[in-house]
Amino acid sequence: MTSASPPMERKGRFHVRPGFLLGCAIFLMVFFLPGALWNKLYAQRALFALATVAILSGWFFVLLSPESNSRWRSVIALVASIYLTISLPAFAYELSPFYWWLHHRAPLFYIWPFVHWGYALTLLGLIGSFFGRGRARIAFVIASTVLVIIRLAGIWLL
Image 1 (cartoon, rainbow, N blue to C red):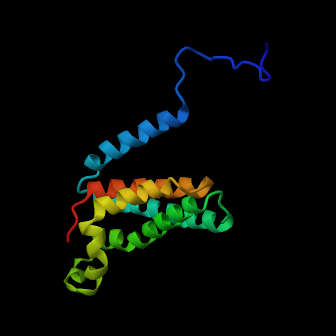
Image 2: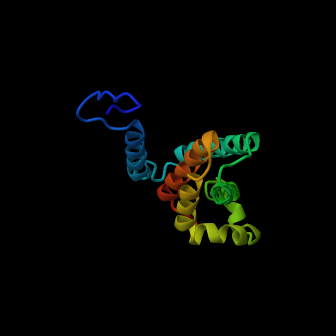
C-alpha cells in the first residue's frame, strides 16, 4: 500500500531546526550579555531604545491585524503587551541621568512594583509575549527579551 504523500527526503543524519538554534542563541545571549553590560549605561540605554521601538512596532502590528484564532491566547498576549508598555517608564526612570528627581515621591509609587517584583513581572511579560501572533509576537518577544537583559544587567536604585 502506498501513501498519499510522497516520502520526505532526509538532508542529513543530523538535522537541527533553525528555530531551535535561534532559541539557543537567544538563551545564551540572555545568559551572558547582562555581564557584558554591567555598569555600561550607554549600552543599556541603546538597548532600551531598541525595546521601545520594538514595542511601538508591536502595537502597530497588533492594531494592523487585530483578529485572533483563540480568545484566551489573544487576552494573554494583550495583557503582556500592555505590561511591556507600562513598564517602559520604570526602565526610563532607572536609566535616566537625572538623579535629582529620585527625591520626589510621586514616581516612586509607580515604579515600586516594577522594582520589587521586577524579575517575576519581566519574565511573565516575556512568557506572555509568546502568545501573540505573527509580526506582533516577534516584536514583543524582542522587546521583552531586551528588557530582561536590561533588568539583569543593571543595579536598580530603589
